[in-house]
Length: 313
Image (cartoon, rainbow, N blue to C red; front, top):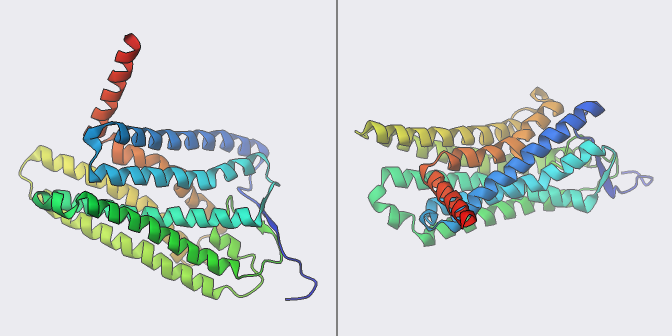
């Protein structure tokens, strides 16, 4: 590096390169999606905490997925909305690194939680008589704590390797938040070690968990086909197929971004893929995992009935 280079203390997020009218339209649309994400996941958390019938391992895992989705959206969407209103507004270096850590931590944790939830469904459908033993509260808490811990530690490794790099200009990140690959492009030195660690982590938290999820649901599908009751078979198949849709969207877009050759996916296309993480996946999870569930619907009806009964009194 030359002596005349200066250290970057802040970055400018270029965001979505669109016209002013389009940006204002997207601001309104994305704000609506953000509110729906927080509202949907918040309702799920409220129902699970208030209704004692939902105090089971399955809904315990689901409550943590809702927390991750809300935190996930809050770590990226506000900055994106601010960028749509004021494109030239900078973000500090510390703020950028913090956002990178939070994004990676929540993303890794969600990958692991999806595996845990697939295991829970596998035991419930394939080994129902042993469910209370294989998925008791001690096991459930251990699985959730492990997911959060591993997700945070892996994100810490990425951020630690990122902090050792000098950033001396340019200071424009071609993204709507401080995504790690976009930040790495601004480093003044070779980043092959960082790229290798990112690829290895992708294999660890994307390919590995996806394989475990698919294996679990393959076993579940085999068990469903052995169910003699047509109603029971349809209910189980509907639940599992909706879960696989979420898994496909989440893992599929992540694998394309972090493991596919970059030349095949220009930066603008990668931004669109990241919208699945920021908006669509966190917004769809409550609908697919919860509000299509008969027990959650029952809890929602009971909560609304109590509220209306209280207002009438």
